[in-house]
Length: 87
Image (tube, rainbow, N blue to C red):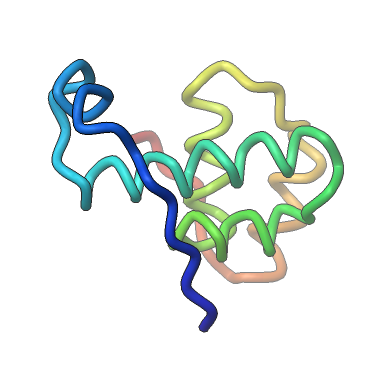
């Protein structure tokens, strides 16, 4: 898997009270959400970028207030054989 290096000012991490590893994970999730929202990535590819399953990704989107259609969620659940639970 390719690795992308981004320089982040130390002050940014201090302001966010995050270490580089947790900031990196948050940044991957935020990028995945935005790229999915813009239609540049499918939910599956966005989930892969975020480091989670497609169902987890869609449930996180729904929990954060972003609209996910029940139809899309049902299709994903049927394809994966997973059940949607509350988190």
